[in-house]
Length: 233
Image (cartoon, rainbow, N blue to C red; front, side, top):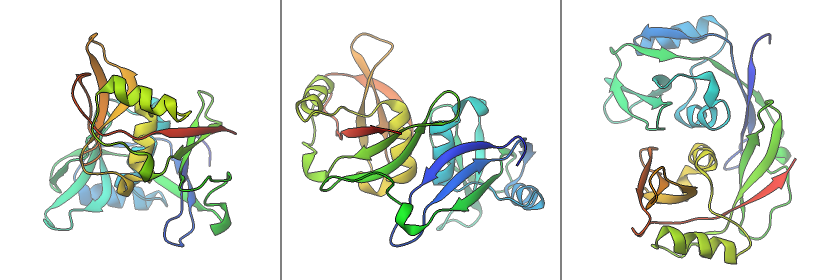
């Protein structure tokens, strides 16, 4: 479709087929949730899910201002609320459906079930999807290492050294956003170190896998860690 942008792969889960995600051109502003749903449907598309918004954040961050956008998901407990995604820091909030927010539209192209993991996986690895290059083309596949490799709480420097000792690395902030989009269930609802030092000497970036927010904290603090492997396309 003219003007649309490729956002990457949403891997299949529990036997379901995965799919490619595309962002349609244009957006709506200042719409309540129900009107946002109708706006997307009128374009022959839909609002993105919470996971899809995180995927858009990981691979098409430049397409969005530092603002929040409606997801297609209503709150399962409080029906007067619906979920959103903040493209500033990655936080996912639930707001009243009557609030005015931005909206974007996406379409999906289903993959064959056999294409859920397009690269060979080592024992215990999980496929997280594609990281796109600056030209929008696939750059590399991201693979989450097995749970048994996770050492628990440790400082940022210790976490970085641990990942390097395995021949891998901590995920960077963008990769953490992709992991949040496609493998959130693999993580505790807590914060994990990224590979990136902070803007202040004694700090480093981390991500909360409950709310999605990315922020800087002291490197001496003990946080959860995971490591990733990358396979070039």
